[in-house]
Length: 296
Length: 244
Image (cartoon, each protein chain N blue to C red):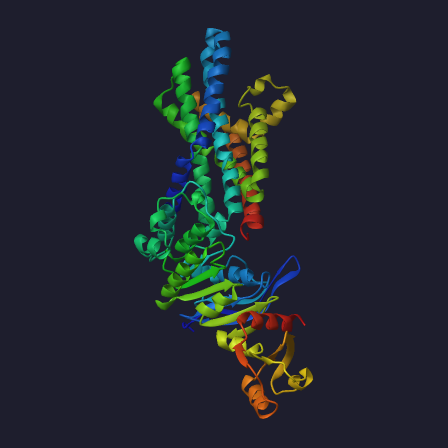
């Protein structure tokens, strides 16, 4: 069981009778980098708060490294960067990092923490004088200072500009590659696609998909085949194998298909085509499809 | 826990506005009011008056300092600092304990400053042991006020915590006889003051100045208030601060 970092078993949580999490089962292995993907209000932050032990589930069980979330936290195995966590005035970035180091049993060297979070130049800056993006970096520094086995990041790149964002993900990658477990919540689909080993899609408090980003796309309707309309009749196209939806855009027709190979083969043997394009459906579309499926 | 204590202490030092206010207000009040009343009093009671007012205003500053923790923790709660600390290995009870201890420490500078003013302005002298017990008792005696401050701060938003803690401070100090001795009150109000933590708090100092031990009922009443405010602080912390 020690290979399991996080385990959620039938976890639910309501807020004043309104369900935020409606029964999540999830097992995350040590060393995985997981994206928790979902729209605002899907239950991502609530799930993270329960993994941190900040919230107790109404039903179900959460364990972190086989312990209660509280015990894992007290043992210094968990670091986090939370959306609604903030800092106080009258302290500098360096003092904040030193505080975090003192609270964890086996902290990283201050110099490394500042460098990783891109704060070396800002070490003497007061926390209340930081910009939004710099504040996020300070949160990241606070989260990783103790070299925790598990890093939980809730919407980490909110308020960051493009350059900070890239630097942040590079640092996160290095941290994950060193064998740490990282779970981040995001509604930036590209981030989940690009940086996670595995994507867990949450909508309306439930897991609606779970797997590698490529699989998630497949599950949600795969590819789009587009070609010139020419003499094709849309109803014939809709009858092609694999096709789920037909959309006319100008003189082109877009076919959403579960099986692009079969669609294209049948087309080729039949009426033929001009200017054919096959594109992978983005995670954006996948995500919409999955969310719609749950709401229906 | 020590690291957190040092971190917060440094923050307190860096923002001297609070301490300045807690120190200057009673010192200036003492200079003005004791200047007038002590000169008008007959020589026999002048010394007693100077000392009594010294304790009253020292307590006034200390209570203000200890209660002001409410505004700070309320801000910490609303900015998410409390939440940040809760997601570290530092136990929440220790965060609260550090805050409470710091709040009581805020009560010491006003006591020392007003004591010094009493010495300089009216030549108030006490045996060194009496000075020590005045400072020591007026420090420990701030515990109920620190707890009341925490109860307010964990329960209320900063915009509300500020006026509420000031109102508590003002009513408690006036009715507890920190500014005007309760002898000047109507009898009913005097009996009421007997039960107030501020009166019993200042009583610690008045007795220490006279070389007396704390009174049993006074200590019991202070302890009672400490328990009530501790329960209130625990309740507001659990209800409003723990989850957010």
